[in-house]
Structure formats: structure tokens, C-alpha cells
Length: 72
Image (cartoon, rainbow, N blue to C red; front, side, top):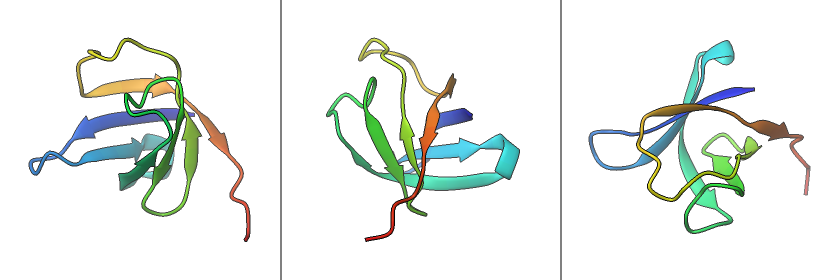
């Protein structure tokens, strides 16, 4: 699934899913550098991001795998 990652005017990382016209803040990251790990959006959706260099410029659109939402 395509995921656009950018920093908003306040410096907060956000994820935008064009197919769903959905933009949410990134509220958690498994890896401190974000790339090659799991990120969680404000609505609970989780994405597995591809491995990329830590200095990858933003905004960028990547092909990320959306993980199923698990009920706890």
C-alpha cells in the first residue's frame, strides 16, 4: 500500500494513505530511525516500512505493508 511520510509545520511526522484519503500522525515507531520497522498511525493502523538510509529526505512515498489491526 502506498504511504506518504512527511513532517508537518510543527515537525510532527505524519502518514498519508492516498487510496483512503487518510492523514494521521505517526504515534509510535519500533526503530528510532523509522525505516525498516513498524510504525503506528493515530488511528491504530500499523505499517511495516522498507529499509532505507536514515538520512532519506522527506516527504517521500513508499510501498509499505499494512498489518491487520489486532483486538486486545
